[in-house]
Image 1 (spheres, rainbow, N blue to C red):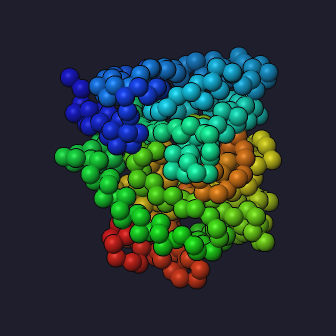
Image 2 (spheres, rainbow, N blue to C red):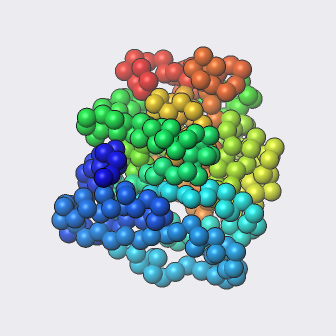
Image 3 (cartoon, rainbow, N blue to C red):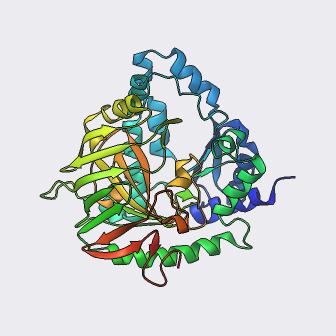
Length: 397
């Protein structure tokens, strides 16, 4: 008998997040460890009249790829993978690591080669995903609905320093799967976040300041803000856009010191500090994992540009778990991602990298990790102080 929360999760992913319809081709990707959720989603897609297929990707195969693949093989772009991403109607994927540290000893250069090779596939994916909400901007592009979620595994529970039972409660609780109707809860979250998104639309500059020394200015003039409410990531809880890299000041200036380890491809850089001038990282350092950080930033021309700026709004997530899906959503934080921008925001930066890194703005009383909190200013007006929005009716209020 399946955990009833898995049944609810499958229902939300298929009916709410991706709105699967009859005759759609639905790709379901996962490590085999997540078979209970794979089966639940597969069954629900069949009941919807779709054409689901399962693509299992064991972590062990990826380990073999990095251990024995030549540089040519690491950089190979499979025409089958390209055809797949051009053809499917819906993509539902599960992160289900059995060993989150399996690539810790892979040479950063080799990780960079594989990351850069995914760029053509990632470009198609982003363009099709953007066409869902803005079909008028992508004439002739077939929209692609997608969602990714975490399946609770022992490896991820260990990263979060929890038992598996505690981690299951953490994961399912963040998605409000204990509610009678989780989809209706997320519809309510969408409404609250829409107030924030609407306020930010048309604004020119955001300034993020934190007691750890972060002071970052981001030009967002003319950019589009996106309300993330469980329709792509699940669980969700953020509003994001891309910086205006065409602005006279380059779009991004200042310094950001990230509060938590920055995790990418199972590896972490800790104590990361990035200095931006005219939109680009001109100085990067880390207390741990600096060689990995620099290798990722140097993998291609666009990797040192900022591709995304976002505000975390999920106040059900309160603690760092070493999993970006959850950490970037923590209510009272912001994240700034280097690398690829999202076309639907108007940001056109191209890169094989998209690395979200999180900075905490909460006061200690609100769960923050720094001595004091921080602020978010929009065109000079403070909208968030110490991790809490100042306006009623916004997320967390």
